Image 1: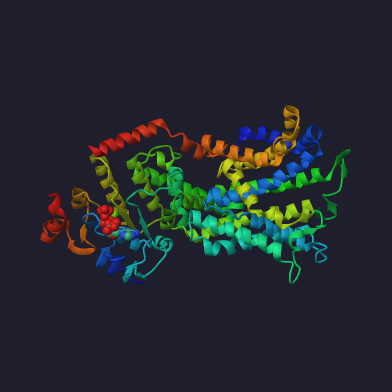
Image 2: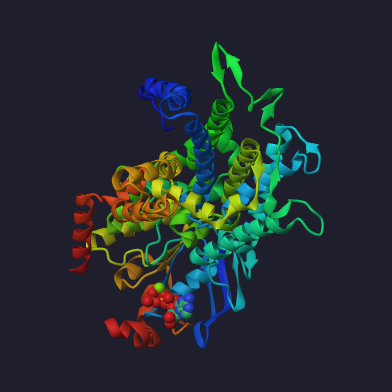
Length: 366
Length: 258
Ligand SMILES: Nc1ncnc2c1ncn2[C@@H]1O[C@H](COP(=O)(O)OP(=O)(O)OP(=O)(O)O)[C@@H](O)[C@H]1O
Ligand SMILES: [Mg+2]
């Protein structure tokens, strides 16, 4: 597929780097940054899920965070003192994924006749509905605890092995954030694998055909409605898994975590990184988690050093820089930082081909 | 087993309105298996509308059409493609940012089956199917005469090649009826000549061809029978040389050009 034989040593080195990465981060930047790396992995999973919907099938979904919420709340309700249920992870995670998938189909079935902007607006509404539901499901019967959210969620554990405790292995201390890193890395690699396999399959080609020209795709025999539903369902499933992991990692969920801004952030990861290209989307996810954090840690001290006081609140400066970065990238690299080879070719059309094309048109005109 | 009927496509009393405009009014015609059937008429006569009706892009208002002994009143495009109607578009509609090969591979979608599970596991059936799809797509690219690297993006092909690629993509669906909407529009004389040869060889392979064309010479040289549309009505039908002499046709169409 993507990796040929020559790149095998490279791949091995890369894998080794990924394995020791949390320890490098820990010693260089501190414990807090390993936690940020964990979140980066969760966001990468989300971005890869959205990439199937937006990047492959070309359907603009602005309410994607809703599926993350469904996964997270499923985990929270079935594994916390809220109802006194403590289901094991192998039951809750798949159930969350399944429910998210179900909601994906539920949203997709009536809306997939809409195109472009209209679909974006409806999905945006759906995302808000889910959040508001979670916010208000505390009366008359208390299910979600409303705006207070659900806390003391069971930590992630598998067969007696808890990811939230420090384990000693080979004389090295693996703390909770390290262990979660490996768990999330495993899931992220799984999601990447699934994305890659789908991209180069009959279904993947159908998605891209729909993205390119829905009418032509339909006329060529693709059942566009079902194939688009499939994209929605797959994307939602990834969101649900990621949401479950998030709930277990954080130990706390509240509707606040699932705002429209989050959907927009994930969309930005996909678009900035490079729509339709897995490596680009991963890059987008990493950058958009790391940079704002770095900014938050750096902006305050920097202003202190330069002006002797805090001139602009780092939090608002962060959003300002984020907007600026977005505009610059879209100006200079409209296909994203790391576009797929196809998109790259599209940006740099072959000179000779363009010339030839002109000649043909000229001939025809004669 | 019953002998398949000689008629492949039959329209009876097909009407299609856009607001007050009758783009097709009571059009009846039948196309026999194995023939090249021409559809001509002045601009705005309703030729493309007729294509859109028989490929399910428009739902007809009145009348019926039957294809391969099945009757369709309102039917989804993908089901008609499955039934064996494939088409090209007047204003080329390729998957511009996919490669030439992928464009044709998409055409195989309707005749293949592997789904998500096969894609994930790469089981033997899926791998074999993928190889067959790619193999057939390469064959078709050569067949229609595209000799570029197969990973050239569709949009970077020359105009004539794009028209051929559309034909290859349509052929990939294994059609019984291939409907071509002005396939030589914008081509020069040599390109037109080689496309004519291509259409003849497609017909010799047993595919019935329905052809919209403004190029009178091509129609006369290629078609077994021709129908003439004018303002949504069929005003003549028959052998090309007869139609050419029909006074109504001369008045409506050929008169302007000849
Ligand atoms: N979707 C539509 N909505 C409204 N009017 C339409 C639509 N499609 C076609 N028409 C009208 O129907 C009439 C027939 O159009 P059609 O495209 O079928 O003509 P044509 O014979 O293919 O012409 P040309 O030779 O220019 O391609 C035209 O008057 C056109 O404006
Ligand atoms: Mg037309």
